[in-house]
Length: 142
Image (cartoon, rainbow, N blue to C red; front, side, top):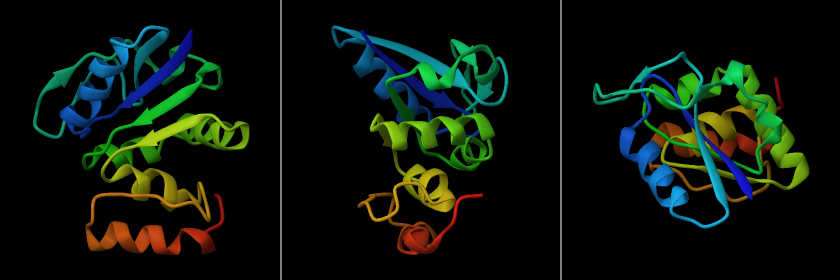
């Protein structure tokens, strides 16, 4: 069984969070949990209230085989600000686990913190996000 965490925060783009959850839950051998970095419920970028399965304080993020990071603003910024998520991404990167980041998150969550330096990341083509990706190789982890 592959254990997958899909992160949610206030401001997450609901389609970018719910669609991977829906598709992954249809996969045989996948165990999917939605994990909030903000509290018991979150309000998405379009005002939809979602109650994730768990909060970051209720799970061992290092136990997941894969991490999914939806975009949306300020959701990506809120996810990036979560130290436990950053630690899980660092562990996943070092361990060769799958990390999937969508839309703004490759830049805002991954590149802004220096994750996956030297790797090709694709994000929403906003100029600020593209700059983050280009600067990724020179960043140092916090």
